[in-house]
Picture 1 (tube, rainbow, N blue to C red):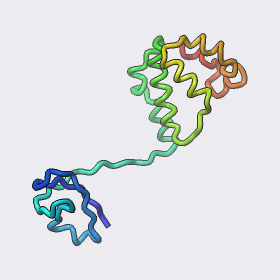
Picture 2: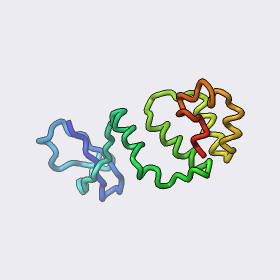
Picture 3: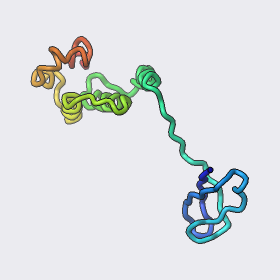
Picture 4: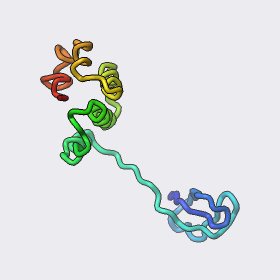
Amino acid sequence: MPIYEYRCADCRRRVSVFFRSFSNIENPRCPNCGGEHLTRLVSRVATVKSEDARLEALSDPSSFGDVDENDPKSMARFMRKMGDQMGGEDLGPEFHEMVDRLESGENPEEIEKSMPGLGGEGADDMGAGGMGDLE
């Protein structure tokens, strides 16, 4: 049961048309105005990636192209992108606080000092050096 998107030349709207079978896709009509002058559009497609594929994409050197390790805001953008790639995994309130503080331009060393869990027990979550690796 396919659903196709069209642009109606009569009412100038983008419409989706549902067909009960593939053999019945001839002569579609606009559901808004009933017009027959429709141009088929290419629909957007979403793909589901496995965790391995998401992590592999993150490790691709081309994804680091716009990251400036001396700019906390640049690091925050990359970290937020990493967090988004982790899917539904909860990275915890400390991660979100750290990214928010980096986005505001705060010095990574000051963030590490004020969040003791980053350099101690939580270091395993962030890498061996905690926030110190950002410099």
